[in-house]
Image 1 (spheres, rainbow, N blue to C red):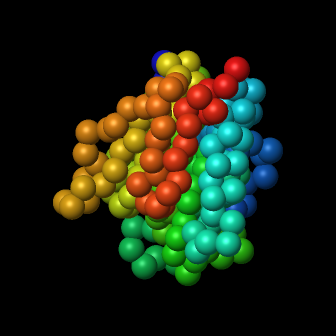
Image 2: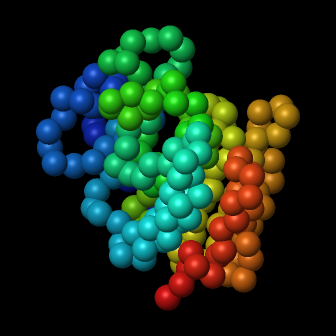
Image 3: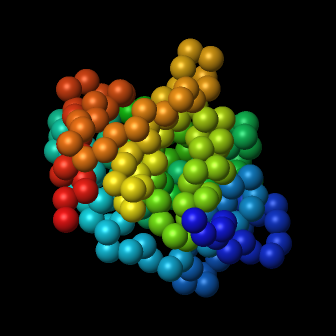
Length: 194
C-alpha cells in the first residue's frame, strides 16, 4: 500500500483557498490539509466506478435521492462557518445524497448518506484511515471501501451511537444490499467483471 498522497507544504487551507488554485491538479482538503488527487486513476478503477454508478443511477431514477461521481465537491463544515472558511472538501468516487437541501451549484455542503471510495495506489491509505475517520465523524450513514486488487467491498454502517460498526465484507458471487435504499442490491460479479 502506498503512503498518503502528496500534501501541499502549507497547512490550514480553507475552501476559499481551494477555489483559487489553478495548478491543473485535483486536490482534497481534510481539516485544512491539502492532498493531491493526481494522477488520474487506473482503468480498472474507472470501470468499477462506472459499474457501481450505473446501478445507483438506474435505481434512483424518479426517486428522491440523487447519485453523483467525482469530481464533485463535498464540503464538510465543522460548524456554521461561511463556505470560504470550511476546512474540508472531498471528492468521493461516488456519493448518494437524499437531503436535497444540502445540494447547491458548487456541489454539496454537509454529509452524503452514502460514500463509495475505490482504492488506488495513490489514495488507499487516506481512504482507509483519514477518510474513514472523517466520514464517521460527519455521520455518513454508509461508507464503502472497494478494493480492486482484492476484489472485495468493505461496508461500514453507523450504529445507534453514530460510530461505524465492524465492516461487512463482500466478494465476487455475493450480493450487497444497499442499507440506505430499499430494494437495491449490487451484484459483485458485475462490479468486478473482467
